[in-house]
Image 1 (cartoon, rainbow, N blue to C red):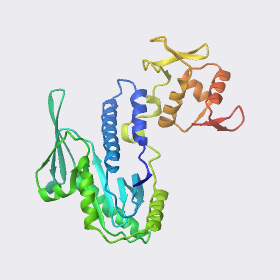
Image 2: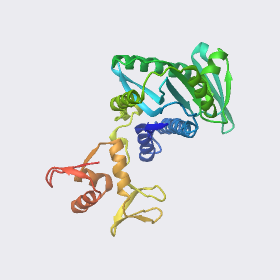
Image 3: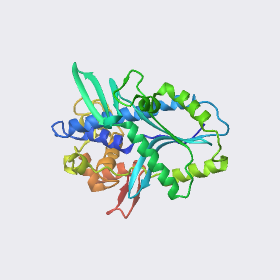
Image 4: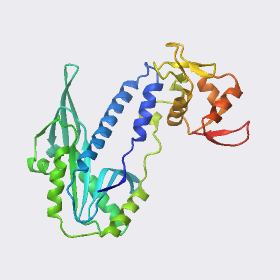
Length: 326
């Protein structure tokens, strides 16, 4: 097994984490932002947990490749594949779900019903059917391959329930659910079944590398989150100020070559680096000295310029109109 593309924490998680730090507690969208953050982290955790079980996959004749977190262009839009395994004899798409409680699959009505208890309150949430989702990924990927004159060959797809404590139930189409839904620990068994089912070699070692390289080349990760559209958050909503690395208070002051927290009295020399990272995620990928002064509260232009230069940022323009790249 060769992992050609590893999974990375998504831009959305990074942005939502920054938002949760930089919005006032009174902001009406903060509860939704924290809820979405929790869901995205859970999804990432589920996808990450697959790695251990992928390492246990049985040996096959010839190498097979693993590509994680793929986002490909498709008819003016994009489609996402959590985990793609390319074997010499078939493709396998895995879509991991890290969900708690009881999961009731109901393909007849294209839904998944989650039931769990939180703070002693019983909750029920209905989602789109993940079986249909992974099948749609498979269909789009086949079409995508044909657009590049590549014969798709045999395909398989699975929904992987990554939380070992979740209870899986079936409301309708039990055979479909049984064939398509598996726990993390069952992936190895399913792959063994697939390798016995698909024995005709479709791609040699050179073909596998060439195909995998094409997919990686055409991968287009998300580079922008529209905060105003998705959450009604504008730049005016974002809290300014350097955040204390110990107590998370926002509003540290520059004192004696460090940042001093007015709340817990701790100091940190490089606390402004985190502010610059949040600024990049939430405001802009570039910053000027005057903008840096505004968000940090630094009154002396010379001090602000020195801090930006010492941060190792690249820049363009002369001293008065210099733009720094975050």
